[in-house]
Image (cartoon, rainbow, N blue to C red; front, side, top):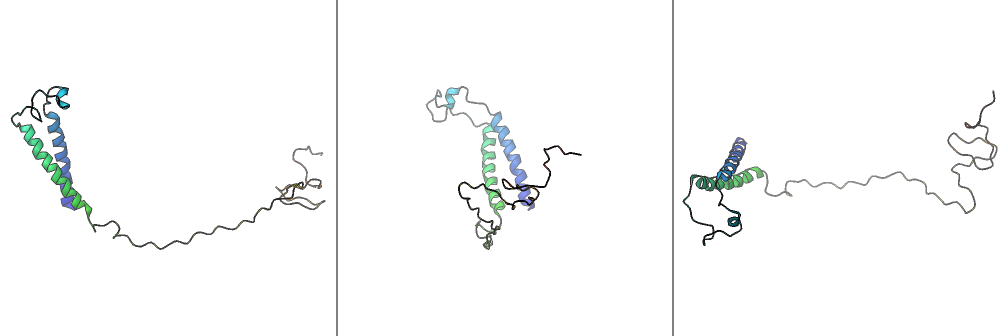
Length: 146
């Protein structure tokens, strides 16, 4: 594991140095050269002598590619297949939900009331009494006599 971290550190250093070397190199001169409109007839522009920066770029790019391949092989670890390392999962039974009684539509013309109390009785708290039924509980909106 120490080798992996050491190679990772080396890889980051190579990346940073390669970035600096590429940025320090002198450009070809004009924008026409970037799009193939250079003044010479050769494919890659006029042949210049290899400078220290161009040699460093070539060496660092090879180190970059080799280190990337070695890190990918070292980081793979375990078996080569993603599927071979997994255990089979047992099927899970569906969770049953409590059954609620089906709501039957009321016949046309009759009012719908959740709990119809017989006439003359008090409706439970929170329930509504059917139309025409008498209630003995005082209404909170009517003023009370003292």
